[in-house]
Image (cartoon, rainbow, N blue to C red; front, side, top):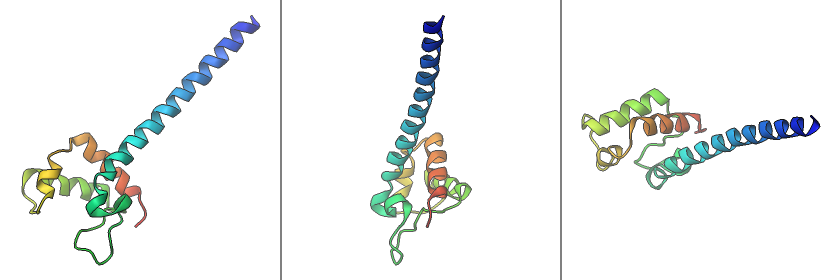
Length: 105
């Protein structure tokens, strides 16, 4: 009976560890996705203050999504963003929006 309890407890710990690992992996995936924006918009979306490209850090998520959809549809003018935005799906855009909204300016 004691062995059964130990096995049960270990199963719960492993399951909990797997959930934590999955959350860490998902967060890492979103951070890697956001890193694709860094060459123009700065690390974690903090652009150079005097630069021509806007920073994304602290941008409201809804505004970010709206702009990305505008780039995808062509209703928002851009030099390269209309092409880059087409490479992101809806889930990725939502993930990026949440990520950048959570970043301090």
